Length: 124
Image (cartoon, rainbow, N blue to C red; front, side, top):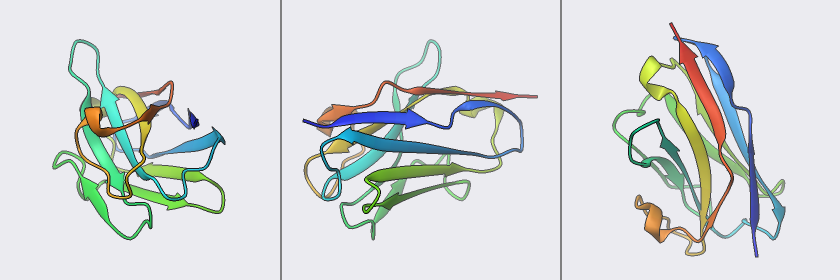
C-alpha cells in the first residue's frame, strides 16, 4: 500500500513559480511511474506531467510544456513538480498519482494510488 502526500501549493501571482512535492508516507515509489494531474472548478481532471520509474523519461501536457518540470528523488521517495511562469488557468487542485508499472500513462485510470491534492491559486 502506498500513501501519497502532496505539499507546496499556495497562492502566487501570475508569472510566479511554485514547487509541488509528493512524498510517499507509506510504501516506496522508487520503481513506479509517477504523474501529476489537476482539476479546476467545474472541469474534468486533466493530465499535467509524468515520469518513468527511472526518472529518465518524461511526458507533459501541451499546456505546460516549457513551463513545468517533473522530477523525482527516489532516495527521498519524493516526486516534484516545478511550475514556472504560472498563468491564471493553472489554478486547480493538483494531485500526484503512482502507477505501479514503470512507464506511466496520461490517463488517470491507469494510476493505482492518489494523493489528497494541494490547491494552487494563481492571481492576476
